[in-house]
Image (cartoon, rainbow, N blue to C red; front, side, top):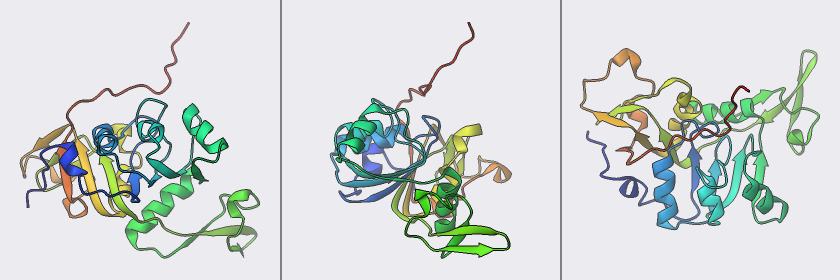
Length: 230
């Protein structure tokens, strides 16, 4: 089955306002920047975005935030985006902060069909407020529920026309687990090859999880924070 979309705009064309999106990436590494750009141009609003962070002011999910296209963010880290801070403090943006390991496991559980799980992360903090807490042995654990989204926007390095995906180094981050936890998974890659060209042992996300794949039009690959020696 050929799953290749002609463009990023075509790949996201049926994402409606009000959708819940899983968006891959860690900082600015492994983000589907072309799909995000296409969503920006589409003008959809009222989005709920689940991602490790919300990009920076003028890149990544920060572009959607700036245009008030995001209603709610579920994230682990929000420290590099001043517009995010402004909207949150002014009450314009709903925010759910989730410990990073818990966020990863909630997404993985969503893809695996796990109904719920207990974790010690967040016990005794605001993270646990209103949630069930149980003791196992000599330690308390908080009950967390899985995440399943309407769409997942994923960034891979290469894919074949059937949607089998290979990631590159740390750009893998949240992408593989998010690919399994959405009703529709859209993958942006730097290169599309023919079926059979990828080494089966190197495939990270099987095509069974992928509904569309598109070759990104251009990449900036920004560095979120550059640190150099004196």
